Image (cartoon, rainbow, N blue to C red; front, side, top):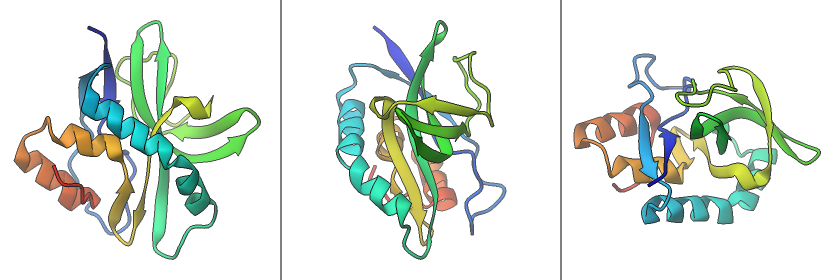
Length: 160
């Protein structure tokens, strides 16, 4: 059984949220996990709309981010990139998570990736997380008190 590593949250401070927020967590997920694969499919099916909003953000929107599946000889991880921009052949963004398995990438550096590698997207609108479909699935594997703290600290509204 192959497993991929999913990073829970974006490690950027969000406006209006406590600096003592709960730390990022990682979860291993089977590549065949139907709930996670459905979340990735939903994120991908709404990606065009996300890019449109990111290009012309409404008032109160910030923290635009992409979750990207990356791999090297040490494993597969789904990591957040923000900010990001369109480039020839795909996108480039700043890695905002500390990789746990991947050794070919470093926090804070810019990397290029293809649209086909994007597995999620998100942003904050007036203090509430929009998108972040894979994070909502990960909530199902976590202790309820931790999930509630994530929701308080980061504005998640998904029902898990």
